[in-house]
Image (cartoon, rainbow, N blue to C red; front, side):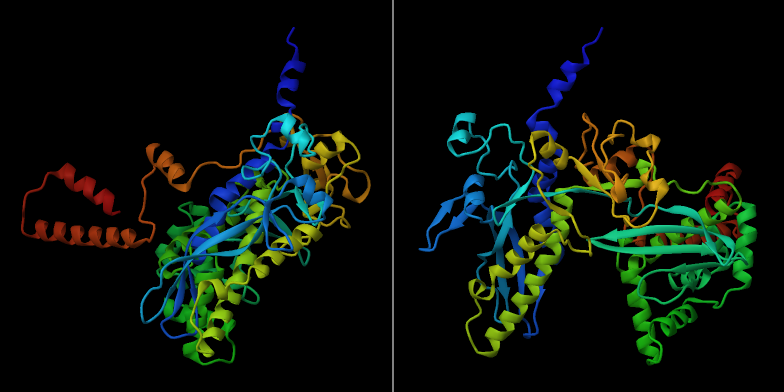
Length: 535
């Protein structure tokens, strides 16, 4: 007989029980911080020809600044006893570029980042048990939490619907059931809900942020660059039954080309403005707010049109019974946001606030004819305050509350349980019966019995004892290379290649016709193959 307790004991150790928190925070330190900096890259100013170029970010080890100016190494016990934050300084390389030229890159301290106990830059790493006892630490303490103003705060794992994934469902509207396809498009912390729905008359309509009401599907497709009826139908489906529905949509089309479509959308997004401004605003809204995860440039519009076509196809397949409604409670439709992911969201918003302050300070110094210096324009308190306050209160960016909680120290098991807690963003005042129920896909992932009674029942859960969470599925490049090795053909990411392919096919077809007219002999099989390609 197999003794399963051996497996349990080997896993249930302090270094495994909160490994998901520690690994995600380490990933945030290694790649997340620099990723946010690279997204910004440059701080623009209103000073003519002057901007700041951002370089590499470097993080130190937790320290404390004494009243006399001395800087000492800080340990968690001291932070608890003195009611201070266990945090490390962040240093960022900056280069002031002006019309005169570039100044030498200088490193400036931009703020203090609260550090998770047990992470790779915690001062307790690599200490022996005896050394930890001498510093007042319990060697069995698993870590995975922060110390903010002397209190131990844990960032609870958030469970949410998977972004960038099409989900179809029925919705009751005015007594009728209509088919709806939704996707939560997420890019750099910004999340936009895009909805394609099929009305009672089988007409498709699209809604997305920054635009009131719903837009006709065909109008939006033509605005994105797919203008002909044939191309619009092909972008949706080749199924004859779906094509019938699409023909109804084309008959009810409001516009016939891209320019008319842009004007139509412009009237919706900038009513009462000049025609030129309306078109400009329409272009901006489509690029920025329609499926931002696919890109925010004009070059990405064809990809967005193809994605909209897939959403329309899903709507029609649901109405024809060829597809079942999405199961939102299936764990494949869920994603878990760990401490590192939530800290990245917080740092992104906090850093944006810092860049605005740096821009203001630089312009102020320029107006007073002072020498522009990185060290004098950076106010570290701006970033520090916006990182510490959400951790201290639990009020996170995006309007979430209760993300950071006071660590339960009732006993050791209560602490471990709290560090492995998962919370759902759904409202506690609503029934949400299906969301609260046990789902078969939670087997082995979520504990079926450890959940509170009352309004939080089923919405506050805990990980199963032996579950592990992957924090990095590999880079986008690695995933693409694996997919390509399986036979998937890559396309040009900027879609320039697609247009070039079409142009090439057309020119080859013309050359073929010309050759036939000149009675040049061709092998019939070759001609047949080429004809198939062009079709």
